[in-house]
Length: 229
Image (cartoon, rainbow, N blue to C red; front, side):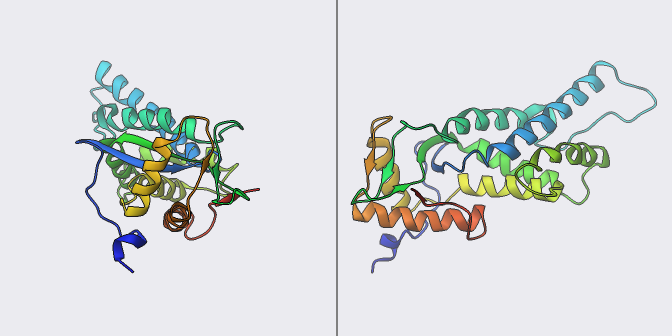
């Protein structure tokens, strides 16, 4: 079998310069939880930064946030990602179904989105910065204080868990394009909003291989439900 037909990754493909078309599966809101926690952390850091600039104190060192945390760069990217990802999660009935070729079962909803490539890169860089072993203790304490938001979904979460979730989300959004993802993207983009999409046999196989790749990144091989009954 030709290697490309199995979905062999081909990096560097984008819809247009600076943009990246990605497939986002409905995980019942799971990706939004770490993003919301990150937004609150970055909002606090932005406030610290503003306060330090407006009222510098002679007896303390000025706050110097590392890139991309400084100047609300990471915050802006996080808020853009939240705005575009939120409608893809916990979708209500009537938003269109992904059906098997015979229509006997339904796949978890999936959306094709075009995102700024820089925002995906900034998310990955932010996760790496927050997970650095030499992160400023005050910032680390701030992160620890917001990780409790994850407790309802992720038991006994800590900073490492938040960093891992953010890095894995960045990995999902940076999934290398393949013949499989191109086939699925084209079909989803050609389907009218709210309309059912019945996969062909080839699309069904492409979906299975793509779901396997997503599982490996997000849930370490398990956790993403392929089917809805």
